[in-house]
Structure formats: C-alpha cells, structure tokens
Length: 168
Image (cartoon, rainbow, N blue to C red; front, side):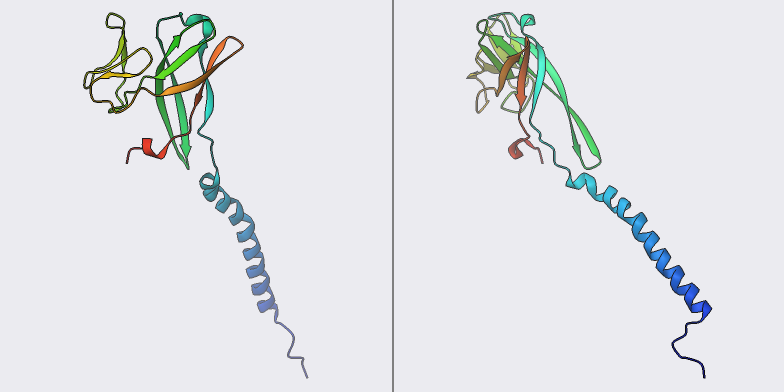
C-alpha cells in the first residue's frame, strides 16, 4: 500500500516554482519599493550659508546688489528659485544685508541713488537704506539676512522656507 504523504512530481515542481517565484518577487520588489518611497522619506534642511561675494567688492556706505539661486527637491520635483538683496557695508567690519523682495507683494526693489532709498516699482513703496518703510503699502521693513565674513567672502544664512511664505 502506498503512503498518502508522498507528493507527486507535478505538485513538487509547482510548489518549487511558486516558492522560487515568490522569493524572486520579494528580492526584486524591495529595491523597487525603496526607490518609490525614498524621496518622500528624505528630509532637507532648507537652511544654508550662501557665499554672495568678496567683502572688498562691496563699497562702504553704498548699497550693492547681489543674487543667488537655490534649488529645492520635493520628491521627484526639483524647483530652482532666484533670490537677491543688497549689502550695505557700514564700516570695515559692520554689514547690513537686506532682501530685495518688497514686503507688500514680493516685487523686487531697486536702489535709487538720487532718492537715497529703495523703491518698489509695483506700488511705489519706499524703504530707507536700513530697510525701514518710508512710504507706500508695505506692512513691515525689508527682511534681513544674518551675515558673516569667512576668509574675505561674505556669507549669508538663508533660512528654511516658512509656511507663511508659501503661496497656495
């Protein structure tokens, strides 16, 4: 009498094929799932120290403009934004670094030498050399960047994006 615990050759091959197929699926699936999930798990510090130029290139007492770009990766989407500002050297060691973005509607302000003020072309806002509001609709002064000098190069701290700055 034959034992009932025996498995047929056909069932053995089917079982082994299913087992090996499952193992191969898991081995191949783990990297694919990792690839799909990885960008969502990455965290970036939006804060960075940005070099904006040599200290000697910025004259004392006169605002001089600078610009830089920052890229931000959100999952698979990469965006590049341009930023700018003005450096006012008050003395050999004292710096004031202002954003060139108007605090009213984020237009770029320009330094008007003849008027001795920053002027926003959008709604005629005026700011002092220190960035204080002189006239127009801006609700608060121009934003300031924290700055320091390293090996003769001016570095500014670019802050992380604030939620109130994000347009929705």
